[in-house]
Length: 204
Image 1 (cartoon, rainbow, N blue to C red):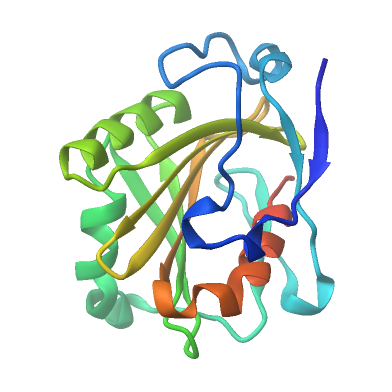
Image 2 (cartoon, rainbow, N blue to C red):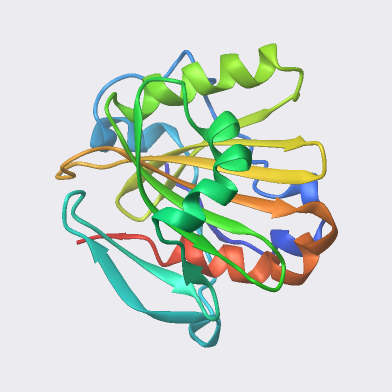
């Protein structure tokens, strides 16, 4: 039986967000997204329309998403400035290709979208092992969101709270990752924005 619930989680605290009890760990998932969906809790994210810009799409993935209001997409020159923070934390697991990177000029938070060269399950497991080896003590959960099976890794690296969400669904061109890097001191101020942005990710 699938469970459904609406998240009121973001007020709980930075490292308690999205920690969900699921029926299997990182090594137990099997089958495609549709088959695996029966194993996981189904979560509903509250989307506040006022916090988000108009819908954008990534044709190479077959996915639509919405950028938080006031966040800006970084160009190639700006990417170099933030690369030192983003790449060591998010890349190097199984071959990820950066697609979009958005910055909140107020909080300094980053929203990163990447295409995965390997299926989400394998990439998430490799990332989990790497973050454990780095001493970050990551939390790993698996859940369903709409048409997706999502594998999430949550950890804190220094003063940065990191959400890595690996998405898989039938019909996608590629599995993909949506990640958020949030300065811990600004976390509570933008928690609802992050929830809305995750909820706005859809197939199509």
